Image (cartoon, rainbow, N blue to C red):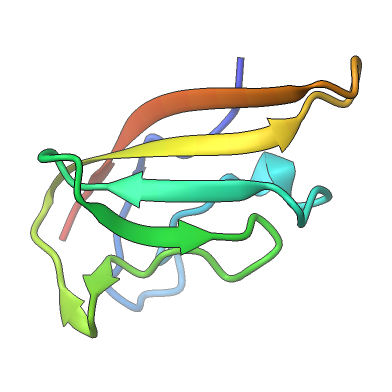
Length: 91
């Protein structure tokens, strides 16, 4: 099971302002894709980066659920893995 934040609050208070799968930060070659509820790709991330700030083309997106797909190497087996899930953006 992948550990990832279930929500984030991009309000610039210094807490939970970006979303990322921090447990993959030691695998910078991993890819994380974030989608809206219609399946539109919103953002591609590296787990070694700063994370997603809740915007698309510089504009804040609404408070709702977003979905993700993460592609990474399983550290135990060395095999390519994929995990899907969702999280909430709260404003």
